[in-house]
Length: 390
Image (cartoon, rainbow, N blue to C red; front, side, top):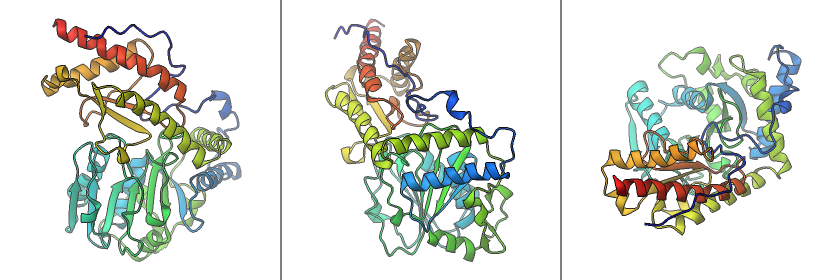
């Protein structure tokens, strides 16, 4: 039994939640003072703010000029759902999942849309599917980064340039931290409250020219609610991609997103954001790799996320317990750290294997993660000592 002294250095910011994520360093409510509150989002000032958010998104994410970018309702979930219901059914679809959110899209397509030609490729938590089995002449739906498993695709090389189907990518915990290969992606979705720490309820929808062509040439057999409609009279509603949103957005949230994007520019854009996330993940992985009681859930280091780092407790005294007892042990660690005020919301996702999940995106400071690691070890050893006495 190792006796670990209680650490003295605490993280300055204990917010390591995987969504909503930590606000950027230096953030305060004062940055929202220019929000046009009480004004119509359709007024000149409102449209200008929305257009500013779209333009900054294109600049920071390096989205090709011929791709459309729109602000849509209901966070990333809304963005994914509206495109699934709008474009699927034109050809067969391969649904790919290796964590809970990807599995949600599989369930929606098979149980709600009930499409006749669906193939499912599902890998267990910690692993990645074999994309060689996926047929890109069909439509393909997948997540770039598995938020609840900590497993990501290393790059877009597995997607052929001459594909016939559309690639639909849920990138909500990858955008602004990983290099999305837009030439390989026809639809990209994400939400503001992830890597840039924005406020919730708004989603982003990015469409390639091929996706636009599908929307304008294919009409699904089922009715679409208003908030899902991207076309009118067989043509794309261009206003959605110029700041004329489908429903009323929060101008306070828009201002916050603009602030985060402008902060990203001060770092050098995507390269700076990715470097911060890589550095943060390296702090966690360095700690994990030097201990024998904790491990990264992602089996292959090449697929480890640099945002949602998912960990499991592998100490023999813990793995000998029942699944419920292992989950209780991991939860006790997270609870102890929360009571100490050094880490909030780092328990694993409810559908994922028990363990810890620590956000390492760009708004987190590496120094805070360095301060957190000794606390995790202290909490583990404290809980293990309690277990031995029980």
